[in-house]
Length: 146
Image (cartoon, rainbow, N blue to C red; front, side, top):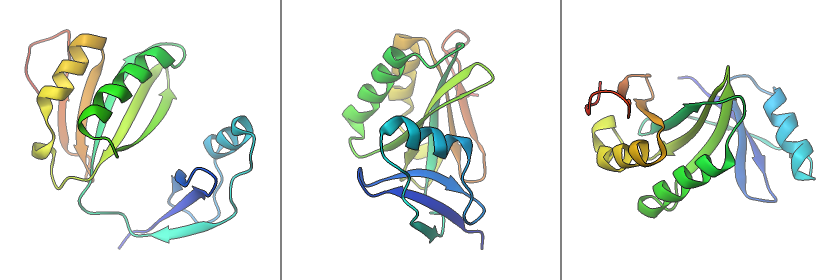
């Protein structure tokens, strides 16, 4: 069984970062702590990853994260899934918002909501399970999941 280590921010009661190695602090962890005005908690919790989880990733290409686009994506998802946890990421000009959904399979996600977001905001979507298997939707191509 594989375990992950979670850095938890007690002030906002949220998970800040997840690592596969104990006591690891990445640049992302340091960056979050520096910008928020408080330090990262030294408390670390060893947790077993949930088997029933999928990730829904909306992404677009830009040099920096566009907070307006991310705001629209998050607000639309939260209309249907108010308690969903999400992270914002940027890597090689690919900006993304990733939602962790408590579902057993990719098929349980409402793809209509994802398609709606993709067309309205002009972003791409990828839905994957814990094994990385999943489907993708491209708003500027055929109107189907691949």
